[in-house]
Amino acid sequence: MAAQNNAPLPEGLEIAGYRIVKKIASGGFSIVYLAYDAEGSAVAIKEYLPSALALRQAGELAPSIARPNQPLFRIGLKCFFEEGRALARIVHPNVVRILNFFRANDTVYMVMAYESGQSLQEQIARTREKNGAGGAWLGEGFIRKTFDGVCRGLRETHANKLLHLDLKPANIYLRSDGSPILLDFGAARQAVGLDAPMLAPMYTPGFAPPDLYTKGAALGPWSDIYSLGAAMFACMTGAPPQAADARKLDDKLGAQFDMLLGTYSPELIAMVRACLALDPMARPQSVFAVQKVLQAAPARPLAVDAAAPHAAPAAGLRGLLGRIGVFKRTRGD
Ligand SMILES: Nc1ncnc2c1ncn2[C@@H]1O[C@H](COP(=O)(O)OP(=O)(O)O)[C@@H](O)[C@H]1O
Ligand SMILES: [Mg+2]
Image (cartoon, rainbow, N blue to C red):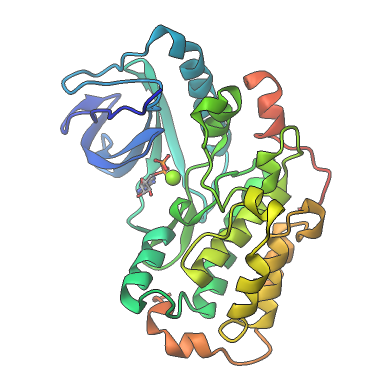
């Protein structure tokens, strides 16, 4: 089932009281548009359109979905909708604000507050361009401050009995004042992935916890905490950590952490290392525990912040939702 290239909705289209301005991003799973609402406020509209299942030709509005793909398309659509509805309950400065949902064109649309900025992934890439491979990456001060905000958003998510499950630098958006926002909660993707292994990989290798690779493994805050550690690791090294399944066979992370010792404080390294433990029980057991380390001042001055001026900017549905969307509070957070 080859991925297809879907045509975006045309610019200027009026849809459910919104006017589409332009496409701002498209992944294999959805297309995101900048649009204006009736009051003229900017919104971001995310259209559910998994390219492996649905094809929209230029000039058409509704996608065509081959009959064998229809059940999966519907499962994904339901999860996209359910997850968004749950997310809509969360009103927090570090979580993308969901404003509305609507159905049109045989699919579903999620309306979000529009945020102006760039993703943490773009920030990492820019740093790589500037410093070259092997140069200093994002500074410790930047990492502590940014991920303190990420932890705030994640704590609120967990307090609402939701998991993110697709935490990675591409899904952490930085406003122009540097404050982070969690985007793109992964449950709908999970649904499609679990019901159709042939559509895998649904997760980005390196950021996904081993819990997601292991069939039937319990998912919980500890799963997001692994990805949180992986995202911090990417800020420190410029690349994702080795994928969890490969680590189980031949773990190369230890040597990489040792190399970071001169650049980052031992406290930060130890915390990130603990987040990335393959055994869920060996990870910090709550986002709050991670946040406490981020907020504590390191014991010694940090060379990297002085050396890197870029581093401190101004500031199957069956049982599935039970496994992913709503977790049982067996551990504290
Ligand atoms: N609320 C938003 N405001 C501004 N840009 C957004 C918003 N939501 C998503 N985007 C843009 O769209 C991109 C993809 O969004 P995301 O939700 O991660 O979808 P995908 O499933 O394609 O990864 C983001 O990296 C960002 O550039
Ligand atoms: Mg994304």
